[in-house]
Length: 348
Image (cartoon, rainbow, N blue to C red):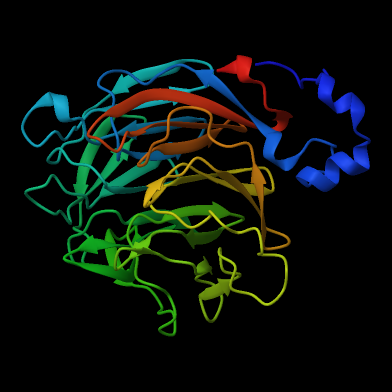
């Protein structure tokens, strides 16, 4: 990994720092927000390339599997899984035991990973499986009790798993809680009717609270953004919208946060959102600050545009990869995002 690039481009020598910041909106480091965050090429996942895969993290290992690749025949769906660590790179693990599929939801609880729902063009699923990382084996668990669906999200907070939203004939906004000790599901508290139905959203967790944002409903991008904490009443709390809907000025630049089939990850005190589509593919990367409930731009995704990518943070380092080209192609590449480094095109 390269260290912070301290070279000053020649054209900057003619500008004072205050003028430069007025043109680009500077971060406290002096680096413009649009150049803060470096994309560094890393090792690709094993064959085949894939889009709309699923991922979860156990300890210092990330697991990525399932997904779509049109070249394999049949429905083009996969059932293999791969493990990644910073020290060992990619290693293939036990295949998923259910039907091959894409667009499945996943999360981890303790030392186990969980995967369920998804579809394969012919069937939409509600089956649910546990992965034991120590034994490298899968076990079928109680089926997800909601309607079968795909493009849902999953996460874990306070030792319980949660799975919700998604699509199957109609868009959905329901959420169910999974208790791993009892292998039982229950419907979570509601959202006072304000939580938009959606598919292709992202979910991320910070300090045992989950955040749900982006996605599409009725073929249009949704703007509302929610935090979930089952220990609070109400459990769902609405945050500032991700579009210019407020009379204040903070969201005037929120022109391209909305999207679906994006990917998001947490690194330090911020979450990062990148890739996806909103009519066309989206390259912009946005950082979300938990303390202020505000978004700011970061270095755009530096590789070819894509939707249905996956991302994860392990050992304090964040990685983004795989995805769909938008024309039935898929990717196998992975890049590391380094939030504190200036962008350097030589790193990819």
